[in-house]
Picture 1 (cartoon, rainbow, N blue to C red):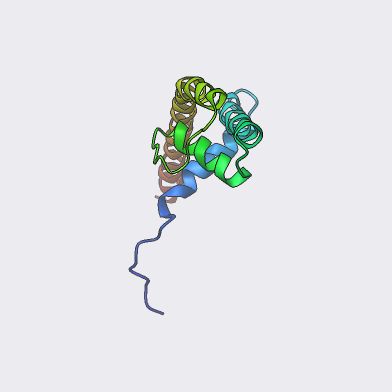
Picture 2: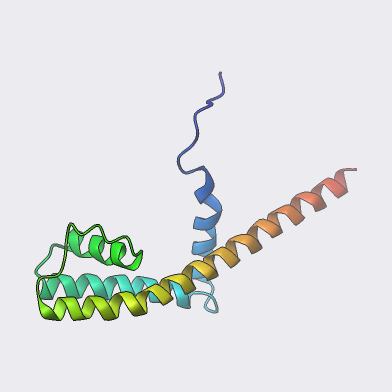
Length: 126
């Protein structure tokens, strides 16, 4: 069987996903993850109720706003929606940065642990 030389789309996501799962399971490390999930839920509920958007549009807008992408294809029409978005983005960016910092730290810790385990296994085989 020939080796598949095409790049794998999700090749580098395994460890960060495992790190996120490990964070979710550890009560001392799950706060940033819960804050991001809560933030997305709050934004989705708000935009669904106040702007009348579908859940998909509300999640999409919430995510794009927090990621500071801002395509402009969907925008709040109400004054309440505009004011909420300002507060949402300004507070949400910090929460998102905190989450990605914690996720990166956990991913690097897990990678270092894997390297140590491999080195220890090689040491026993010599």
